[in-house]
Length: 294
Ligand SMILES: Nc1nc2c(ncn2[C@@H]2O[C@H](COP(=O)(O)OP(=O)(O)OP(=O)(O)O)[C@@H](O)[C@H]2O)c(=O)[nH]1
Ligand SMILES: [Mg+2]
View 1: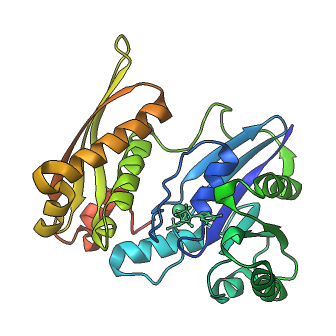
View 2: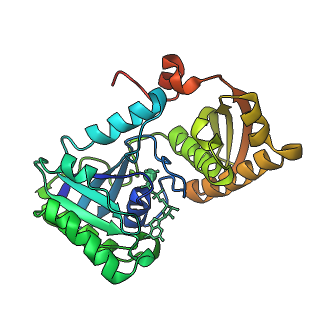
């Protein structure tokens, strides 16, 4: 028997939720970028050690929603607080405090751990004064001061999480990293590179549609064909770049990440397509995995 359970990682956009989960896992599974709304799904990331299995549920950051996709993301983030064993509430210590989410957490029936993240970016006295105000609204919460980027506080967070979990049998196989198929991991790798390399609003109108993944055992090569979907011709031109410079950067960085994640060579072929206003079109939202009716 191990300590087992589901732990939702919740908080405002860009607080460092996905970074914290990746650091707990010890390898990079989830997309991270400096732009808000990087995460678009409630993805399960499975952590295993000798005495525990923790199933982290990453969530889209809470953000003022735009359009149908934005509303789906917000609904996903809020619903992920239900039916779990513990909630890790991630706060960016360097941001001006915002107590809206504390109110949403005040009636939670499960233990809450405040992951007070990015302490590297704020003077200690300012950070502590802000933290005290959060704690006064969530007096029962445990607090872990962290800098996920520097791996500071990760061990303490894991041990606080384990303290909240019950003994039981693992829910997932010990070699499983996530509940999602490889096509999903690939699409998230490509989307992350788009988030990182493209500026302004373009990344938010992108979806990745992986068409095929074939693996050649003898050559140890994974061949992938996929589409990068954007909403406008002007965005397509930006994603392709001058003489194809941008799409080749996206392809190069994505291939490197895929090669290190899957441990094989990668032949990645990406085509840019325009689907006007897909983020407000139920058919396409569904096709790209953002289901309104769930
Ligand atoms: N300085 C500093 N930066 C951090 C820390 N943790 C995360 N970051 C950075 O903060 C940015 C956002 O990190 P993410 O992990 O994508 O944040 P998120 O909460 O998952 O964001 P969304 O998915 O958009 O809601 C990235 O640029 C990270 O590198 C930290 O402890 N210190
Ligand atoms: Mg995220």
